[in-house]
Image (cartoon, rainbow, N blue to C red; front, side, top):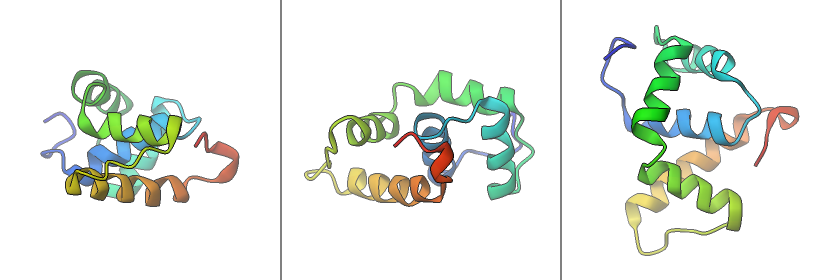
Amino acid sequence: MAHGRTWTLDQMIYLVVMKLASSYGWKRVAEAFRARFDSPATHKDVESKFNKDLKKSKIHQIVVDWMEAQIIPEDDPDGVCILLDALMMIGEIPLEDRLA
């Protein structure tokens, strides 16, 4: 793994949220990621992870569904947990940088 560790679910949710729900570019996403997770991830690492693995992921779809139509994955307990984590992370983004 380029960022030095195996990606955790929390890290993947955070990466999707920061890319979709903030106005941050990849360098700023990577800075926030490094600060939150004490990770050596570069902007290339987070961009690659997002584009290769997360763009078509369940996490991505859940966040997009919420942002576009406030859809809650009611029949999917794991999906609800992902959404709740994502909403908490969205709440941490400064209002001036928040897209959701």
